[in-house]
Image (cartoon, rainbow, N blue to C red; front, top):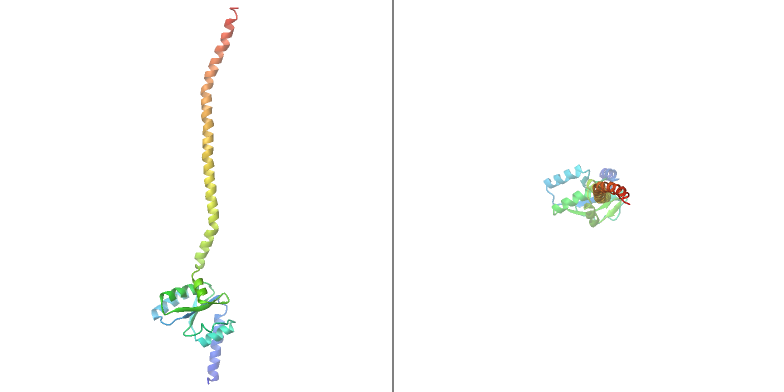
Length: 205
C-alpha cells in the first residue's frame, strides 16, 4: 500500500496539473507511441511556437485531473500511452497534432475537449481543417469586402456607359449646329436681293 508521502505527492501532482490545465479552450488527447526523438522534438517545437503546451501524463492522473475540471465520458480516451496538447487557441492544438498524426503513422488522435465540451475524434479532425485565425480573418474580410467591390465595379461600368452615350448625344447636336451655321449666310445673302428687286418693278406700272 502506498505510503502517505507517496499519496501526498500524487495528490499534489493532480492539484498542480488541474491548476495548469484549467481554463484552456481546447484539449487534444493523443497516443504518441512510435515517435522518434527527432519527430518529438520537431512537433514540440511547433506546438510551443503556436502557444500549445504538450505533456505525456499517466492515465490515472489524467482521469483525476479532468474529473476535477468537471469533464466526464473520457474513460475510453484514457487508455494506453496518452499525451495532451492544450491551449487557449481553439484551433492550434487540433491543427498541429492532426498534421503530425497524419505524417507519423503510429501516432493517433484519441479525442479531445473543445470549448468546454467533450469532442469525438471526428470533431477534433473537423476542427483541424478550420483555417488559422489570420487566414480566417482575411477570408472573412474579403467575403465582406467583395460585395462592395462588385458594386463599385458595377457603378463604374454604368457610369462609363452613360458617359459614352452622353458623348454621342453631344456630338450629334454639334454637327447639326455646324451645318446650320454653314447654311445661314447663304440664306441671308439671298434675302437682300429679293427686297431690292421689288422696288424696280413698281415704276413700270
